[in-house]
Image (cartoon, rainbow, N blue to C red; front, side, top):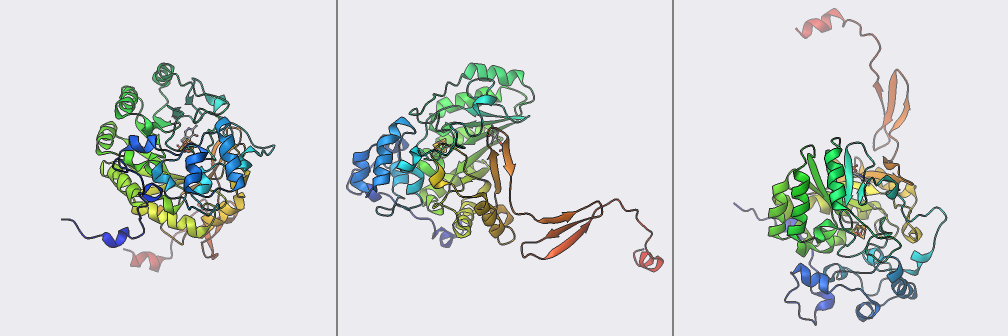
Length: 395
Ligand SMILES: *Cc1c(COP(=O)(O)O)cnc(C)c1O
Ligand code: SF4
């Protein structure tokens, strides 16, 4: 029996057809139509929204760095007039992308130095990151892999699939493979299935996961056929990428529910960005909406030191403040781990508010989310017999 849960849907909106209302949108729900009709140049962009000088100049320069592409679905979330719109800041280039800080890098997480085979990043002992494509449905201006993603930047991704499979076969310590890129869900079902099947033929690989922004950029791609194919390769997890509650539209929710209904556990990765999601209120709304879509917030990333991202960066203090505002105040399931991907290639390091006030061999002094102080004794002091009468009552 189906219960009426429509009251839970009220925060989920559909923005379609939005800026396309005067066009033929009979194929709106077809993901190939969405890709063919992406906004990729200045003229169609200016037809729809009012650009600032900073944005205009950014768009003209994006072809030499990270291409601009925005699916009609995602474009509809953009406010026509407000250059501070949190969705707009994520996908419309700005001239500030050409500004560099001396600590910014083209490969901030030091991935290229940890590639034993082109396209395969092996940084941690038991798991690898497998970059299977350099294309995405839309491009995020802060992309940590903008050196290779979109094909417009300084390098190109030269994944060698056969070499990668051979490496994985030889490295029996690898039990977890994370497919990423670019966006692996941009492949056809058949192509993606070929990769999953090949990985599943390697006995020591237990766990597969896919990192994808397709559920938020192109929810039309989450077809029943795709889900049916993916579920053959369980255990398979998907990490999605959403930064602002507005991204969770009714179409996105339906796509996520379809994935979940096929047994795929869903996590979310967000990037902390100035003017996008740098407040407790926005983050809390995002994480609550994610839980309603059956997605568990997984990581909140401090912005990587990618070239030209200083206009989107906040201090680490902001991230700590947000974590402080969540823990204890809302469901533990709604709280991601806040991490800094250590510049140069140290991997993800958890950061956050300090809850341990002091610690020695005898005791740990902690505080809770309200600032109240508690002591937890450390084991190690010899135990003494309980008083006789107390022991008797326990008989
Ligand atoms: C993030 C990442 C992983 C996965 O890390 P988890 O903490 O296990 O999610 C694996 N390899 C690389 C290179 C990564 O950047
Ligand atoms: S979807 Fe991921 S890989 Fe693609 S541009 Fe955005 S952050 Fe980069």
